[in-house]
Image 1 (cartoon, rainbow, N blue to C red):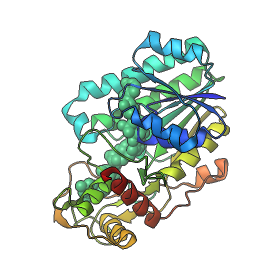
Image 2: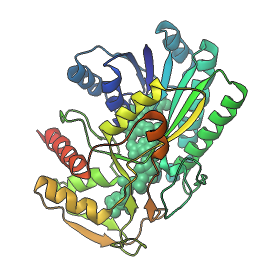
Image 3: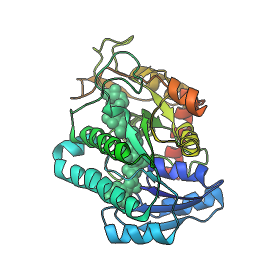
Image 4: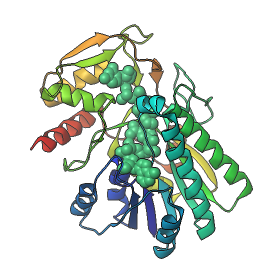
Length: 329
Ligand code: NAD
Ligand code: WQD
């Protein structure tokens, strides 16, 4: 079948494209605001399969309609979004325009063209603060930054749409903290903006590109005082998408995480051990808006999709470093 990936030149979309290309035609629409065309070439190089690419913005209704009609799209995987928490606080209108304006246009066109299957890249960020693992029924409604609000709002839009369109299959995937890279070292997390996520910064501290990593807070109620996250390998996440796409049936929500949390210091130690490098760091104050703990209960995806994350934190650290080194060559 032909699958459209919006934002398919980005970190998550490009890795999912690799897996999807095994059995499907893949069409990518991306405005390249946080990526470039070299990613499309790399996807084709890794898979030895052609990818149809359109440089277009999902808010361009006419273009989008033309793309959907000419390619006989059966399923849409919607990854396109702006995703920096910090930037969203500085530029809220840009985030609402891109992320909310984008989904509304996309869904309107989808209905006009008659596409029935829709998968949305949501985030752990929708959940309210919790020290315990959260499942799909846990409280949502994080409003600590505009980025998180766009994810919560989009989920509400999709719920409303599903209620009056029982013929649609809509799956919401709530990713926890995707890290790591494709084993080739060709693809990884390579934002155009200065990275704020932990692993790209750990890699930069290890390579000497930055003097040291700031560890945000060591006074959290956790085993070593640093915050806990549920890190998941990008290729496990990618596998999960294939199962989600192959098991669409009405309105569904799944957490995609490992179910196990790691502290910031544990990640640093694991990265040093896995790659035999030093990660210089210093403890600084907490980052505003950070939760002490974000870990998922991944039972539902296992029971309903037969999906379980397999790759270890060691592998995630190795692949992150492999990608960082290959970028420098
Ligand atoms: P990314 O920035 O690497 O990829 C997003 C892609 O979308 C980019 O290539 C960008 O150019 C494109 N894009 C943005 N706005 C667009 C528009 N209006 N029209 C066309 N293309 C547009 O981000 P990612 O990490 O791959 O994230 C993909 C999705 O997953 C996003 O929706 C993000 O919010 C969500 N998500 C990411 C994470 C994470 O940690 N990476 C975690 C949870 C959820
Ligand atoms: C992880 C941990 C930091 C940087 C964000 C978004 C979330 C989702 C994933 C898209 C935290 C600590 C980080 C640093 C540090 N994205 N840290 N020093 O904040 O869990 O989630 O990305 O949906 O929406 O909010 O990820 O990688 O920024 O941070 O100590 O320089 O590392 O405090 O505990 P986060 P992260």
